[in-house]
Image (spheres, rainbow, N blue to C red):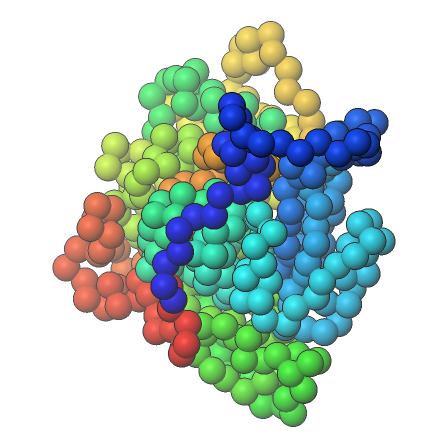
Length: 425
């Protein structure tokens, strides 16, 4: 697909064209809502959003978007008719109207849409994000944002060139207790960092396989071809319709990337490694996999146990102290003195509204959100490279500048996978 010039948002267009010497026609009466009075947001200040693939977690994310006063959702898209109907009904109840699409390219062609929420199955996250950026849309994409190293690099390159805003759905970067633990590590309060622990919820690597073929429904009911996206074709099976099921046949670990894209991302941030990834990866031994950064910090991926502070826990260990935290919102510290008189609100459930607000603010400011394209690229590379070491069951060395494994052709072949026609990253 040909690249397109980034679209000038309507609000920025108005700011740059209505200035000194501009001819302005003022109507005799302007409704208060149009001026943003009474708590309403003027149309020029609204962010117009389209929703792609909403189901399960996507419904929660969409609700967070719709709760923001400066958001207006105008369209939804899904290859499944039942989900289109459910989502369209909710959007209509809120805004009075909602267009519905089966093919995401039709939604992306709309010039009035500023941003898209992508919560499809993980197979299509990177593909749709890249196509959205090329169409001039900003993107909030659920995790895992990519399924291979090649997709990670392509996503970062596309958003870098198009200057569109990208926010990966690793919302814990905008949750207070995680933020507090990260700052203890980054500010040296634990002493020089030595070991960082992530709990990805499993250390398996798997593919979607080839389930028994069943009668394929009509395109209106389920557009199977669009649902598969760039993944290798396989016969229809309703068991593959789960949004949480990896459909691409790529080397994506079930637990390792599902929570890995959260907790490894936290470890990357704590180690100030947002522009790189570990340089050595090791297979599973005694229930955990490990990796090593160029600065000597060790990353530990734990496959089981260790959930006293809630799901997706992390632990950061320095020479003089340590901290643990998780989705319970609580903290465990090597010393109460690390709080230094500060308190951290306990917020359970890792709410996404802070993270979505961060994205929306950056859509307006054109700044970079906390999980921008570069952050998402590198944290996912760390996960994918670890998965490859686990799958091959051997130690691997990785060059984070060339983005290739050193002296291992088999590992390098697993960095990406072929895409099905007509899709191109």
